[in-house]
Image (cartoon, rainbow, N blue to C red; front, side, top):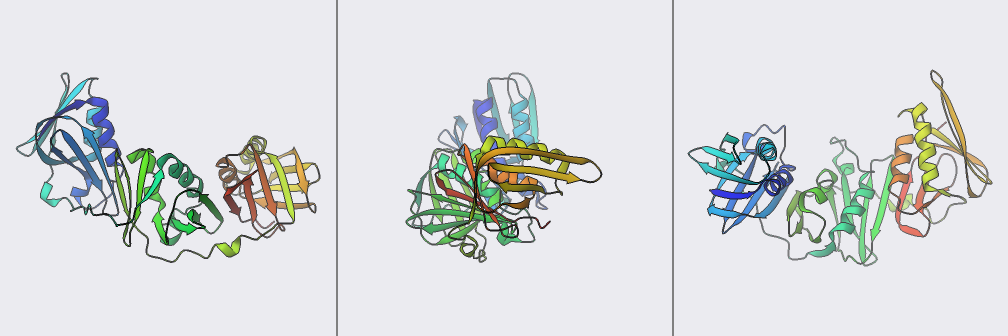
Length: 359
């Protein structure tokens, strides 16, 4: 195998495929990238046996063939070469990477040991605007758990809803729901968010096809393909957590609320909640930390309902408000012990339900 390509293009395609490589895998072959060249097209595949990323690049193909190279080392080596054309040649158990002087010789891994990747897709695929899906996933993904001991909560639910697609995630402290109109979907599948987090950075956000099979979910663009094993578990029954109406409603500037919670967080850090006293004319935020001090401020807004005080984890509140698109945020509550609902004015497509902290 022998190719020539521009340094930045080659570094990019190696890096994107390398995002699927498990850095702590006990199998040395899973530390590598499978590089295959045929008719001037380089195909690079990285996998940890759960997530697979395949990327493509048009190159000057001097000799067809395949090799497996150390993922991180190869990508870093290409990136460190001088600007311009880079050559990569595999022969006699070595991969030589050179460009404008510097030369790396890396040990070649066995192509025969690399896992066989099934390219077959489910018969039914969904056409989506990649940018829309990536944005929606970033909104709900903040609520996905990172605790691998609770795999059901580490995923994003892809669910049919009124002829469109609904994305849902929860870590049991908060729940994020995003409805994506104009995207047809059938059934429901639970997809690990750790793979979806990399979607835009691995295969881009152009026109995209989504295939939700019984065992795997695949996302395909012109730049590549990401495949991930579906979580075989029942997602929590979240719909019963979303009441039809709330008696109390605060309407406030998103920027003002974010700034105020950010100041409160300086005192609170991560374990002290911020208190919101909801009353006519707006909301008063306060946080008290005995060994440090306190912070209090008032934000003007519109409030309808009974005066009440509710407290939230500062990080969870900041993350929820931060992914709302509207300039004005609505916080709806029932009482101080039941979850509060955050969403933007005139935007019911994204909703963020947050459990309060008991005072």
